[in-house]
Amino acid sequence: MAYSRWTTSVWYTFGTSKDGHGQPQKRSDWYFAIFCDSLETIGGFSYDELKTDIDKCIQAVKNDVNPDIKPLITEKEIDELKTYMLEFVFEIERDCEN
Image 1 (tube, rainbow, N blue to C red):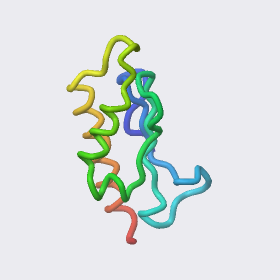
Image 2 (cartoon, rainbow, N blue to C red):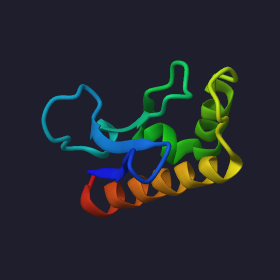
Image 3 (cartoon, rainbow, N blue to C red):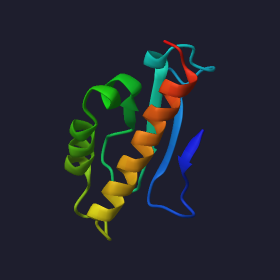
Image 4 (cartoon, rainbow, N blue to C red):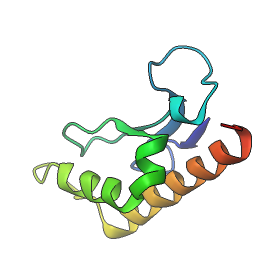
């Protein structure tokens, strides 16, 4: 399930399994993948990481932005990413029992 795509956002985000194979059966098996040209190393976060401390995940994204890639990621774009993260957590909790 995609939450954002390149055509309308600097982010390409989607939910997938942690190992990238098959449909996750448990909440803890879900992974929120993030692609963005401005990020150095972060590829996403597990459901558990987002559920435990979404603000820590947002800070990790901010710390991972490459300052040499222009234009820089804006606070509005960071807020946009957070809405996708929250939507992901909501859908996993709604659709997965455990």
